[in-house]
Length: 291
Image (cartoon, rainbow, N blue to C red; front, side, top):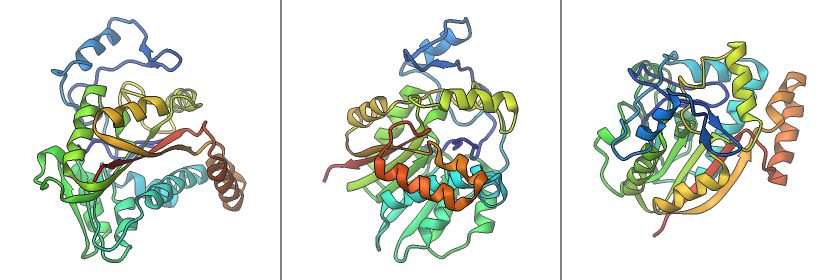
């Protein structure tokens, strides 16, 4: 399932005709009972529509631009996230890696630098795929436009799947179907690495502030339709057939300190990861399909 990826600064997106959502109450995991938000009942059923994009369009080059030319905290935020994903994917010669919701192809390009791997980036934003294909060209790297469940991948043919900032863009029932689909694609012992905003952090406040400052494309009700805690993420993995390798958080204070210089941000990032702090704005989940 390829869908728009978004973290603190969003990744790729496509226009969708329906994006009716509500704001989640982080303290109780319920929705504010306004008439529009009561439509969640439909979302939570098996018959809920499949969400294939956001209500807004984000340029195909977005992730590459913010990583290379964005505000210092933006650059640090995305770089720390990509490095963590790369570390936990641990690419090895012979690996077939699928980057679902690859956006402008930044992470796929990094992964393709590992010798002996083959990387496929998938995204439903044609502008993102066009940009990635033109910008990152390697013999072991391909990009495909579409939703991953609509593309022809053989069962048990993928060793590792990375799914960064997509989960929050799809409805909970759809997320279960996506995780089961990934499980079918993964070879025995295969690994799934994801990131998604951490509702047990300052993320809900940060999202609210970002939306009102208009520094980024609107998140609430136009991009994000679900938020996760570590417990909820572990439950999703467990009920779809995975064992949990690791769940941790990223990006608590470190990215913000980049305004004072990248060396300080790097030092605090290393400290945060050693301490295993729980309040980072992103959850990182590492899950495995049993052999």
